[in-house]
Amino acid sequence: MLPITACTASTVDIFKTVVTLPVVLQLEIILMSETHWKLLNILCSENETAYALIVLNQPLVDCASGIFNTLWDKASFKAATDGATNHLFDMGSPVGRLRPDIIAGDFDSVRKDVLEWYKQQGVEIVCTPDQDNTDFTKCLKIVLEKFQKKKLDCIIAFGAFGGRLDHMFANIDTLYRANQWAPNTPVYLMDNHNISCLLQKGCHHLDVGSSHEGDSCGLIPVSEPCDCVTTTGLKWNLYKGRLKFGELISTSNTWSGENLVTVETDKPLLWTMNIKHSLTE
Image (cartoon, rainbow, N blue to C red; front, side, top):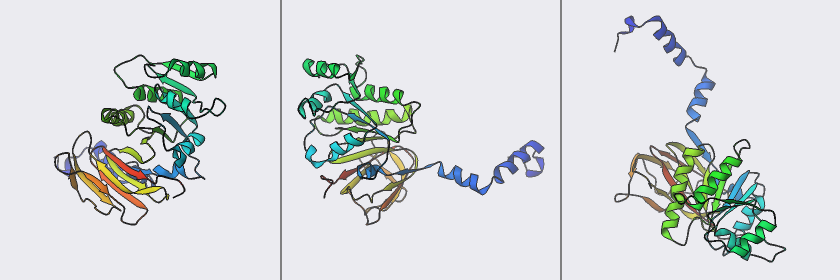
């Protein structure tokens, strides 16, 4: 390193510029690395979050709980993947049938009569024959393209868990891909019992005081080890801990009684928590 007396005028000027930034601007730079999550506020009656709902190919059972119906009624945009269309069709009578704004997929799962009925109702049908990506991945890309100019607060994929294990991991893989396409649009994986999101490198503040949270949560290092994870607000917290499959992962954790959980991580980390089965509990 050059001694300070050897610094050029331009170097000194740059140095002065860096260290004399206004306090407000310095604070804004610090806050850029922090993300605030209010995952289950979407279920609150007064919530005004603008979100798109993507329905995945899982049976829409237990909908009497109100969770799916609440999400559907409040969604700004509704999409269904291939086989999910059958489940929407089977939920009600022709008069009360749920109609998405768009149906997308390679159509190897949806029944022909079902697809034809939705065509007659004026629902947009988009065929995506690409076999290198899942129907969820392709549908998510379409939704993101439609909302390039109109900002969404988040995108919710409902029916992401249950059924085949490989499908569940494929959905989690799409969660990782989504961050590459739209890093400023959170994507949630959800069903009647769970909600998950991907925490990128940085500090995260998670609101767990909406009254819809269940009693368990987890931090899963799916893609790679997380070497430095610090948490607060959990019953079993970490301080600069390492999370890695085969060593330690945080499952069956719970809250310490506070309404806020903080997670600081050096690598992408999957956050998951369970939901009260009924909105009236």
